[in-house]
Length: 280
Length: 294
Image (cartoon, rainbow over all chains, first blue to last red):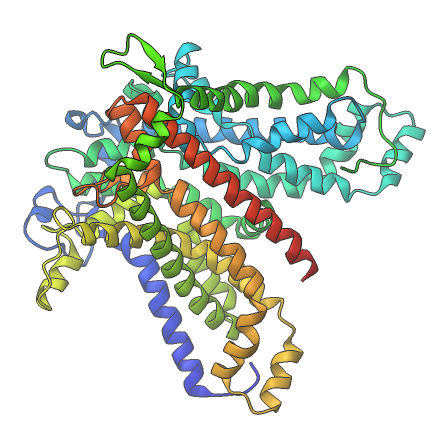
């Protein structure tokens, strides 16, 4: 900053600490609640310090879940979430890479038509066309399956645009050199485009993984079999109980939030890159 | 639209490369959207046996329906509240972090992670803190004489979902504001302080105007977020209640279609929402073209 004002610096740190405290508070409360004994949460107010039953609650949630609320073990739900998130991420990345490659490096009839067809999907979030999409998936017998959980969500205009944008910045000489050396389109894609796109792929991977992990409405609708529950929607089943068992629910919330939060914390640079680029 | 100067000749390959994306798009996007359009023109009888063509009747009914008009205004309040709250807090935090040199990256790390939390989980977390019987906040509010109860009070419920939605979005706004602040040339700020402008004056006369493109962009993104991505927050907490006080448009499409089984009306609502998304997307793209020349 331009001038040195000790008081201003003090207030700046104070503001930020309050800000951080507000941001962390809900998660802190969840952590505290997840370490209490069953009765402790029903006795008026919530204690502000962690209790001694953390390991017990987490193990119980992980291994057996809350069966009377129809919630399967969290370990299984986390696995389902992971499979769904990975399927969505890898699916999105691969079909977007291929279509961006076709759009940039080929000239063919209806190129513009296909481009706009993909573009339109950007405008139709799953929430607004939920009922007809559900009908299509039901007609295809894809309810209660990983295919039904992931395939309808893998079309991605955002990723296609991002890769198209990136391919446009690759120097013309790359393709010229490759063609002079006799490389066909697939070899060019595999040996030149893919290695050049690694950072972009990784950045998008982070964003897409979080997107996939946090899906809620879609799994809620198409899974009626607890074997396919994902953790984010499974938690809702537990809270809509008559007497929600908050100590177990909060243990599940912490477990459900941990994987994507760790992804952001450990891959912060890629995350920021992915976030700023997908919105361009 | 441009391509490379040199391209591969392709008769079959480009179509094969595009096929997976196009097939998924046709089956899961274009076809259902077409269905929604078609169903919005039909009316099913009470047993779902016959449907008759009613033209724009479903749309006309919606705009005469008090519940739908209520949902429109609920959505407006929710979107504006979430956007304002989240952007104000994010701008305050970002401009403060921007002053820091050594601690900047630490604070950034501490502030960005809520982006990873699913909207439904954000809802559950805030629902728990504000829980009228065991929550910590109602307990403190009671000491200052306010009876918090989002199960009965519509405005309490609305505040609750706004808090949850804004909380989750702070990290996103923060990152974009911080990037915007860092792209402001330091020389402008130095020139202003030589002319005697203090921090507050510099903020309002130099920094804030130069942030306008970022602010406008974030406004559009936040409104889209509040309108479409917050289904989880509403569903996991208030379920549209009490007495329709938090029944946003997106939640109502789901509630009328899956719970109320009024397919024609739900489809008509979908179509209206699609029109809103298209309009917002156009605004966003128009604006981004301008931002490049700013």
